[in-house]
Amino acid sequence: MKSPDSLIQMGLLGEALEDGPVGVLVADEEMRYIAANRYVCRLLGYDRDELLQLRVTDVARTPTASDEYAEMIRDGVRLGTIPVTCRNGATVDVDYRAAVTMVAGMKLYVSVLWPRSGPT
Image (cartoon, rainbow, N blue to C red; front, top):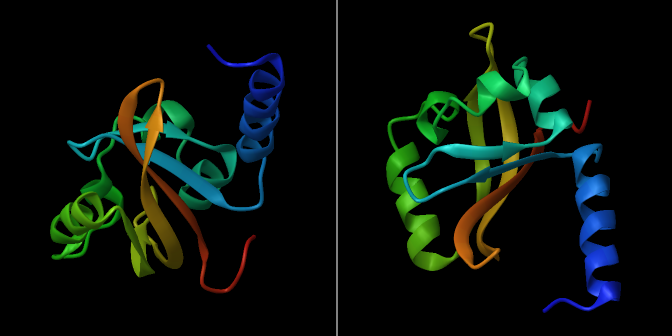
């Protein structure tokens, strides 16, 4: 059971990330997005419901995206730069750090990303 202080911390962290200065995406082992913050929705031009219908390879459309995701699952962390595809078809180069995390006892994969030119 979580202590009251840890529950407060979790709530504060969740609120901070929702409106934070970088994109945050959470995906499952099948590369389906299950959570996205406002920044990444704005960066990619999707509303949250649309983005949560996509998979990692719908946004990171490089030939190696699936292999890189598998490496992140295997190694526990991955960082780099990758072009992502926006809703309007434009691409944006982003720096990212992705890692395995546990949420409510489930293994999930969180990515933090920002445009190469810096947050917008």
